[in-house]
Length: 387
Image (cartoon, rainbow, N blue to C red; front, side):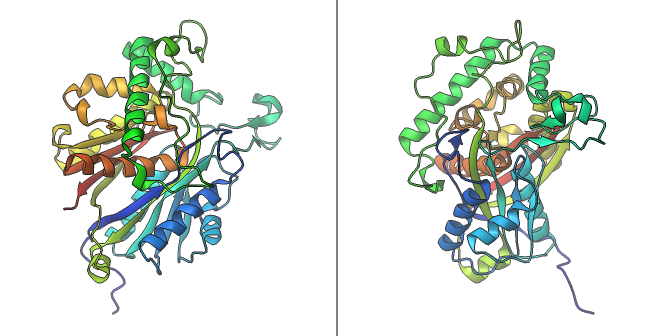
């Protein structure tokens, strides 16, 4: 009988990866569709690594126009693959796309996959419930931009409210949140000046810089930022991430492919896992999922040389700093989404790229990337740098 798949788990490697600059909502990429941003990255990856045969493409997208955007993106890029699938796990979509590709290679179902995501906050469509849907009459004209993430709310501010609720329950002050926002911009500014991430950025229409980093941000400016949920709240325009346009993908491959190609990979993707928690406190899912990964692999935060959490809200940083103060020197070494921004479906792959560069900067061994998603979901990935 023919053997259809390998009986032993295959090792999975990250050959490399690239991303676009991250454009601000209605900024430098305001009229570029997400599938075009993604196609530019895919074309460059295939050219750089001379990829002529792909086993599949997984692309995360959270707020696009629907349909299989990954297949459309692949066609725009001129690529053919047996599988092109769009993943929607909201903010964790890009990481989940990498998870899916990792799982297929582990199972022996292919040797080379492209995985990551693409997003355009600038072109996010307004949707409408069907009049027969009971939710139609609960929103003005049944229209919405933010999907329903929890059975108990249709609020279009559900994510902001979740961050505020988490901060309140944890006793986190606005000053703590603002301090982390400032740290993020300062580190991102230093990284841009040093060119720390230049090698992973594909220019788009001549644009090379991430648009949301503010070198002149100060505590005084942050103190003047408006509260987003009214008097007495701590969530402001300064301590939540901006919304962005961008794409990011990595090349995942098997050890068999490496032997045949002769390439040296950037890292081994050792382990990937997901987690869920209270949808009303979704920011907690980043660390909860990272904790699960470390428990399942027998590692501790002290064993890690690079830690990347998606800073959708500064409350995520404060919670991590309180629980793991001894490793803050390796946490979001180049700054995080509070500065770079959050192109939802692409952010998981952005984290992986930043983790790879963070490991390289200190010649480290283990790196972790973790991201929370709407509805209380999370994804975490463990990397091991290759010599």
